Length: 83
Image (tube, rainbow, N blue to C red; front, side, top):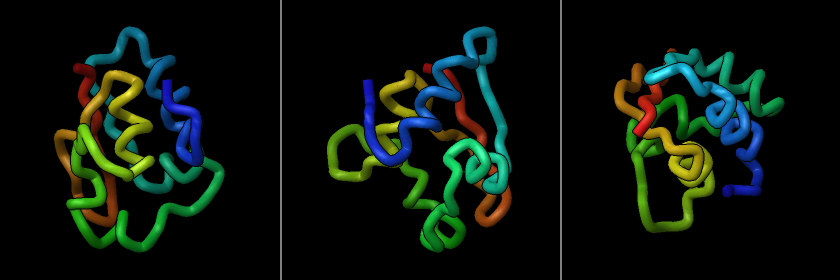
C-alpha cells in the first residue's frame, strides 16, 4: 500500500468500500489531504493521469487503493472509479 505525501487520499479511497465511483471537488481533496494541491493539478489533465509506472506519487495514491480517475473537470472536480 502507498505510504507517502498523498497517503490520506489513499486511506480515504480505501474506506469507500460500497462505492463504485466517487466524485470529489478539488477543495474536498485538499481537505482530505490537509494541504493545497499544486497548481498543475488545477491546470493540466495530465496531472490526473492513471500512471502505472513512474514517479508521480499522487497517481500511486489512488492506484494503490484500487481506483482510477475517469472524469476530470479542470479546476473543479475529479471522479474516481473503483477498478
